[in-house]
Image (tube, rainbow, N blue to C red; front, side, top):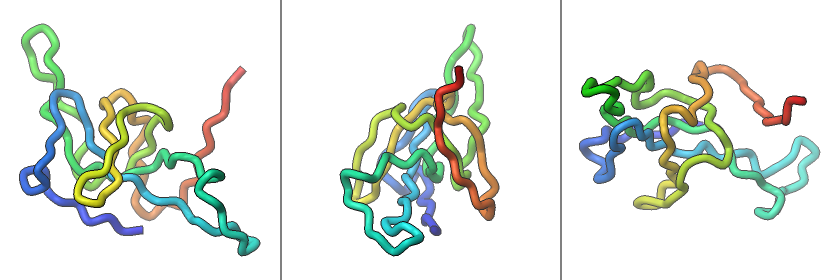
Length: 117
C-alpha cells in the first residue's frame, strides 16, 4: 500500500516534543481462502507510515532529536498512543519510545505480538 506523506507544515496537525504521528496501514480484509473478515475480527494494525515527527524531548536543557523521519514505515506497540481521524485519514499519535523498528518499505513483514515467558 502506498501512503501519500503530506509534509507536517501542510497537514494542519503537528507532533510535539517526542511525539510521532503515524498513518495506519490497513490490513487485508480477505483471507487467503477468500473469506472476508468482519470488523469485529480485525485487530488494530501495528504497522504505519510516519507523517509527522516532533522536534524531540528536552533532557537537562538539551533537545534530543528523534531518530525517525517522515515517510518511514514502522512497527509500533499495538495499543499505545491515541488513535484519531483527521481529514478522513486514520492516524495515531505515539511517543518515539512506542516505535519498535523502522522497516524497509519493500519488505514483506508479518508481525505478531506474543507474550514471552
